[in-house]
Amino acid sequence: MSRKIKNLPPSAGYDLYANFYDKKLAFLDSFEQFQLLPNLGNIIGKKILDVGAGTGRLSIRLAEKGAAVTAMDVSEEMLGVLNTKIKVKDEIPVPFATGKLELAGMTIAVADAENLPFPDNSFDIVIAAFLIVHLKNPKIFFNEAYRVLKPNGLLAITNINQKTPPELKTEKGKIIIKSYYHRPEKIVSDLESLAFSIQKNILIKDKDVWINQIIIAEK
Image 1 (cartoon, helix red, strand yellow):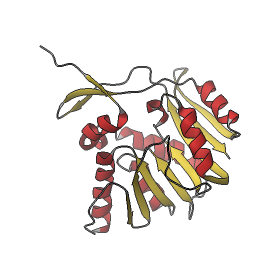
Image 2: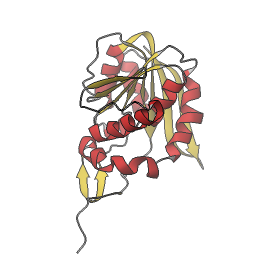
Image 3: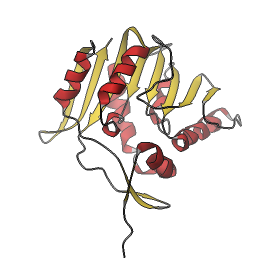
Image 4: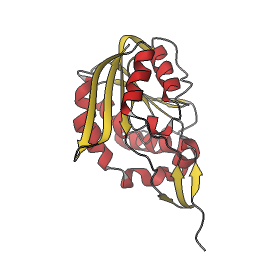
């Protein structure tokens, strides 16, 4: 008798999947490095909030390029993997704990994208790569991003064309992580309704079918 596949919220799902994530989804690094990052311009010295940072694939690249990065995720286990990577890079044994950790110019924070624990006008750039697929109403997050961005700050998001969440293998069996499909034009409309100015709206296609959307919006 087959075991029922659990449909889990992102916090619980990614806690279970954290130790498998980098091995299974390494291809995302190429997308971020060659298609997302070039759209951010010069980030040296910029204060960047990476929302849904996960195991820190993108956060580390941003820090290596000279940004002051806050890596935030709802999954403590995913950020625990990031912390291990930082320790290996710096050879400094710093224990990870829920909350915030200052290390090598990077801050790690466990928090919810719909309730960002930061003051108004805190960041030059807010990035959310592969995040909004897990948000039922991304506009709540967009509103929070607008709040924490400095005047003329940038919000960079990706919107993946995923109508059916993939099955993920974990030590406790197969799971799926709750996800939601968002039409590209609806995302643009939501951003503009909050007074964001769309700077770039890029639809990445495969055989005339959009597979991902990159939006750069200015506060």
